[in-house]
Image 1 (cartoon, rainbow, N blue to C red):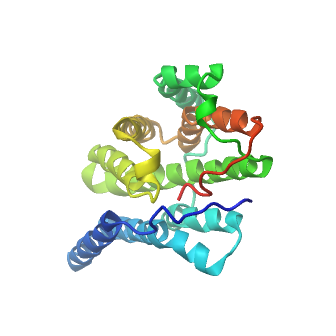
Image 2: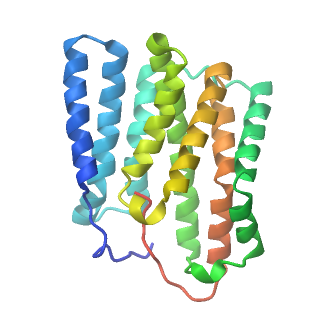
Length: 251
């Protein structure tokens, strides 16, 4: 996959390092008070923070393949839900999956103006072309990100924290989901205040849905549907003539 120049984009941000320090303090306090659920949650989030903060630079130093970079980046989000639960009972085909699809469609329709611009192609002049290989990488990356985020932020956090804080686990899940996007290395270039509002809306909607249905498949489908505007945009970018890459990771 073509590489991009990162010379104008920092690898580390103060907000990331401050967050790591704060989570470390909270983790020590949680371990001191022997809060099993909170300790497990903080350990898992701490691992994700380390990956989010340092892995892009590690990739540059070691030069390993991009597909491996994506896999390593999302590994903590896959790993800790598997550690916590021996089986994912939410993988049951039932009527709740249809409800998840409906939620995804509603969330997608809420971005009607953006979706209309993408479908019409009126704003394509603003976007650079991407190659077929980069389009494939983006689909691969988005698949991993959606599945891992639903495993971690919906399945793990809500299942884990509902034991002690009940419905407040929905708000905690949505807040950490939104906060993790703000900590992203490319956040200042990719996201606006409106983006974070949508992140919070998606987090709350899917959190409520998962809390009452335990349908992880429904959450994953809803998330895929919500992100479908990105797939359409990337496909249209692949069809453009000139070829320029803006950056090579979402990380």
